[in-house]
Length: 282
Ligand code: SAM
Image (cartoon, rainbow, N blue to C red; front, side):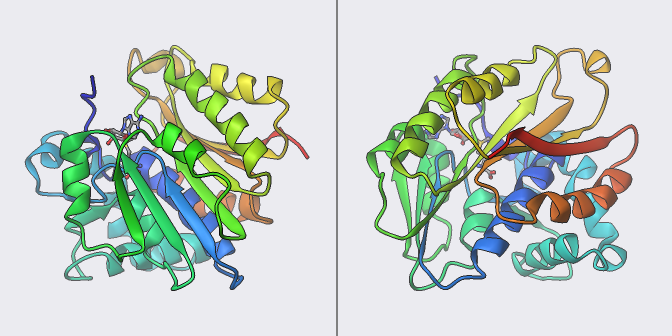
């Protein structure tokens, strides 16, 4: 049963970390003309009005995107973060006011070119219905179905390049290993693909099963970045941090993100920290 709805969490610190990483990867991929297929295996709604009942209930964006938006003029000096904030402004009906937070389909696809394709999978019927109503380009195909199975069925893709985001809700503990198995199979079918996986940092530490399964499965060139908001011991049952894993990361990603995450950590308040590096080197 699917009960998770991302609208309750839109714009929180994990979204900032995830979408900033995604933005940095895509920015690099767009430096070349050759066509790209983007696959978002767990798309969600695509766009989140901040005043929607679900989003305004927990207001997680107040400890995520809001402090960065408020400081956007000063933060524009940092190239990647400034560019991300400018993109965020461009997603607003009125670019001077933050009223909407865009989800991964938008961050992946807002610079879709004529030669590119995008497939957006969403299994929850209600969330898929929301996604279907977004004014995304016709090349952004929205599929009501399982994103992990859908990814494997579509490989290899016809374009020379492929970028995949896997962003489950991890409602079931089995999902960590399902993601690892899917990623290992997908990388055998598309060796040069850039694949991103988001994972939560929770006191139970199940993300380690995912990371270790990838290393045991022989995957190479696996980079990770982790944004920690509080010590695991203080988190009790809640999420204390956000992790992003990138297979085949673009050159320079680590340095660009480290520079952009430093002011993010500073603006989202102590005792936050960010660390990154190779999980498995080349
Ligand atoms: N990627 C989105 C973003 O960054 O804006 C957020 C996605 S949210 C964390 C996870 C989504 O995956 C939920 O909307 C959920 O309904 C959906 N979902 C859960 N299991 C799925 C599956 N097997 N295939 C596709 N979507 C699934």
